[in-house]
Image (cartoon, rainbow, N blue to C red):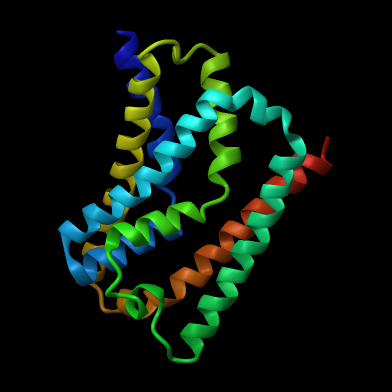
Length: 210
């Protein structure tokens, strides 16, 4: 029962975190639309490989990382500026008539794209540190012995399911609507900008509304 509970909690946390429209999902859509399901699966594999490392590390060292407040704060600030920079770069590329990232570098193996994009998702560290502390401290999961592997399995299934589901939804919406093809290039800068704004709000609430 504990194994099933660990897997279920991990799935719910990760699935809920991956469902909101983000750049990993838009990238998944681009790969599915242009290369098909098999490359999308390889892309998702690249994403979850990095996530597995991050989730496992934060699960083991969550309490130590939570005490590194300056480190977490620095990552949050860097991530905000990083997202704003990406939004500007993608907007300039779109307005200049250049192809978006995944069309420009279409020949790159999808698994490599997944590894890179997941690797630059710096907010994974504070996100998973906070969630792992929460589920462990509130006894939603047991992490001693082999039980942590079932929690990790659940998180990876949740991430993969979320990305595949949103990518497929965008793909089939695009199949039935021509305007999606025109909107997609602008989704990248818009999503990066919205993520940055969200992170700014969260940062302000976390550090200046105490």
